[in-house]
Each structure stands twice: as C-alpha cells, then as structure tokens.
Amino acid sequence: MKAIKTCLLLAIVTTFIGQVFASQGGVHLDKVKNNLCDKASLQRGASLYVNYCMGCHSLQFVRFNDMAKDIGIVDKKGNVLEKLVNENLNFISDKVTEPLLSAIPKKDAQAWFGVAPPDLSLVARSRGKDWLYTYLRTFYEDPQKPWGVNNMVFPDVGMPHILLSLQGVQVPVYTSIEMFDDEGKPYQKKVIDHLELKTPGTLSKEEYDKAITDLVNFLDYVGEPHKLEREKLGVWVLLFLVVFTLFAYLLKREYWKDVH
Image 1 (cartoon, one colour):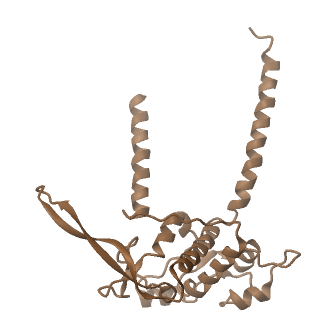
Image 2 (spheres, one colour):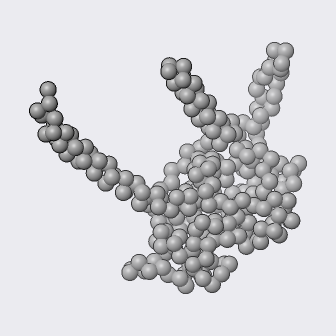
C-alpha cells in the first residue's frame, strides 16, 4: 500500500511539473493583475479583441448578446444595447445572437496559412493568464522568420505581431551563459537576456501593458463566463455544508446516546 501511494504521488508530481514546463516553455512568466469585476476593462478588452484578433481567431462558444450583458453593455433595465454592440463590436452579422466567429472562413484560412488559426475561447484556461500576458508582450524582431518576428514564450510562432502598431518594434539583447556538452566540456551559449524597444508604437510601455491586461482580462472572462457567479454560489454551498454538518452531528449524537 505504501508503494502504491508513493507511485501515485510521483505520478502526480511528474504530471504537474510537466504541465508547468509545457505552459511556460522554460521562460519566466510575468504576473497579470486582471479583475473580472472591472466592466470597463472587459469592454476595452473586447474592443481590442474584435478589432485586432477576430479577423483570424474566433470565440465560437460566446455570443454577442451574452457577452454584452456580462461585460455591462446594457441599459438601466439590464437590456442589451444591441445597436451599440452592432456598431462597435459585431462586424460579421446583424444579429447579436450570433457567436463571435472569425471573419476568415476556416477553409480559406487553411489554404492561405497552411493551418487554420485556432479558436481562442479556452486559451486563457489552457495556457494560463500569465502565459497570455507575457506572450502578447514579448514579440521581437527576427528577420529570419516568415512574419519577421519571433516570441520569447512561443519560439518560432506562426503568426505576425498583430499589435505591432501599438507596442512598436522590440529587439533582443543577448547574453552568454556557460553550458556543458555531453563530454562535460564547457562552452558559451547566447541567450536572450531581455528585449529593448527599437521603434516606439502608438502606446507607451505602461499604456500597452494596461491594454494587454484588458485583453487578457476579456479572454479570462471568455474562458469561463460564469466564474464570478460560480465563486459566489460556492460560498453559500460551503456555508450550507457547515450548517448541515452541525445538524448531522447533533442528530448522530441523539441516535447513538443510548449505545454503549
């Protein structure tokens, strides 16, 4: 039994470590401080997404009307402001009941890019918020790549830096670290130490980081739209279980008080 427990523990630890390294890619991830209760941030993130990302990436599990209601695009009675949504967010249909689909048909994207851009409905849950935040801030100039850019978190990334006009052009600054070959002999390897801004974009560094926080906040909401409701309900469930346990214990004492 002890050996089985040990094997299970090792399996869990190994799986966890593997997931951590897979999600991080060996790169330090910056912590994002997003807030799902911040409706203004969610609205800014939604605007960024539909204007810069939705040309290629869909959010097929979210509908415009549900999204608008959740992020606060409603009147005083709680009704969705359909005209506002269609004018500023919905560029693919006249119906707010439609999902957020890419403007490029999947077959055409497959033919043009070799692979269809993935749906990003669950990217915040599968990759993690910190991964997204770091990824969107660590594109750098690389003339050897087809799109002229690379990424510290996602090396050899197969997409352009779509937010280049906002952030500007970053270039890598290298440093040398000592490595050892199979025979134990040391050698120097060049690695990226940090990124420096070569050509400024329309936003300052602080403004761009804030914009990315808004975008990640929106994608975090999309990954689990009812997260806040679930957490709020969870508190009441735990309180109910505490009270129920107390009454169950008192009932058990009453039934077993005469048993010696």
